[in-house]
Image (cartoon, rainbow, N blue to C red; front, top):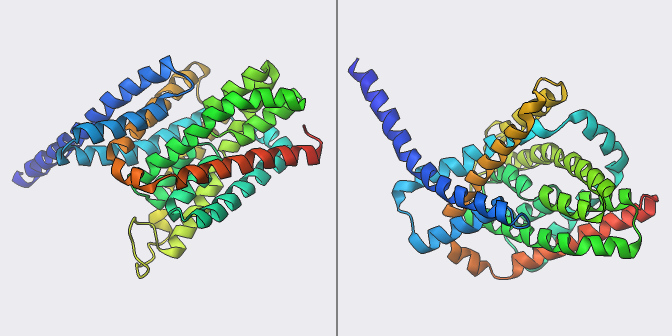
Length: 347
């Protein structure tokens, strides 16, 4: 009986410690949410990262907050990815995916090849290179959030990658619509370009509807289709991590390989299950919007925690090379998408 009481007290004490970090991330996330509402082009996700980094740099939360911040930045991040799966109708994604598959796979290949080549040229750390490549290739912060629990980068690397991706999302929203009109792209052509060459969903939507209503509709579906690439990419990266034995940050060359089961992104299977429920019509339409908002809010909370874990000094020491990497990969994807469309007569 005494043992059972001790276990309960220990459990409550552990969650009391975790609650401190969750509460701090919640305050930062709530402010970031308000900023995202006021400045949609910035968005709550990026605001959460930036605010978290600033709070850590200016106020230095003590070790008492660390367990909850780590829990929020890892576990809640995975749950948010699962929640986003409820917004994907696999049937509609499959139909649009068949039309855009060639361009989509081509831009994925361009992104990863450009990231690998430029990362080596600029001597950017491997995990940061992978995060920038995945974020540019698939869906910005969501893809980075999905891959981070698998490769386990330093928190400042995750924050830097998301911030870099955001910078070029903003540039794309401003320059893509006038460039599309200048090139005479059709509505479908521009939607395909925006959906395959802009990273974040909100930025795709903003650029697409700035061009035209049909372009915005098509760009949104292409973007959601592209988002499903998270699943095979995560599985491939998990297999690579298991084979190389580098699933833990800072593991050396002689580290034991952790095995696929330990690095396998099990939350990706739940993401697929959530999408299947949406496709089967088992999620009431009235709940879709609230569930999506809840998933986004959970992601903002998790990204605030990542910002609170980030080391601004290390980000500063990284210099301009990660930004140059992001610029190069983004430019390669934007040009590659257009080239594939013109080659296939889809522009």
